Image (cartoon, rainbow, N blue to C red; front, side):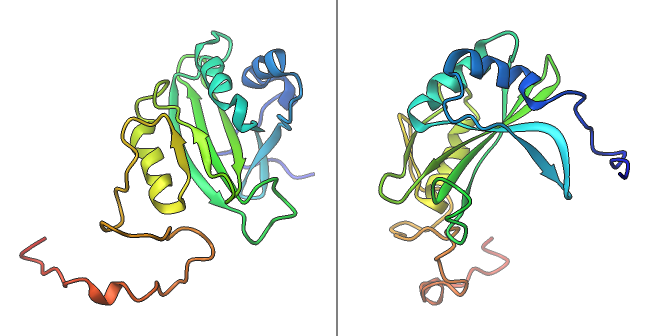
Length: 190
């Protein structure tokens, strides 16, 4: 067995020993948490990724932030992955992914919630982390996921009246012909 790369930390214990996983298990039991190790460059790094049900997402995130054993005071990332080509691997087409950091306890956790096109809504976490505001808007704009309770959910990267979601896997790489209708912007105007 080869040694892990020096720049990738490896957790000493099992994923269930992670403070975030412990806190979630105490409150929700197994409830589909399914903690898995995060893989970086082909190696497990000892940072769990948990799967949360949409109906407990808001409560679980609040618990992860407020419980002093977890103390996830920072939302470092919020994004989405389209699993269109991998339906057998994930429980839903879209995986909304949250990267959490405890700056006081120096640990991280990934949390995911899966949704399908039939109901693309998840609770907003802007009440917990103000930085989620623009991140949720970006996911809404590019994937079409609706964040319930968001204070100002509107598109921020695509032009006014745009109807599609460009980061979905079924969006054509060449676009849908709308690019040709934009007026070119010159260097002096930019």
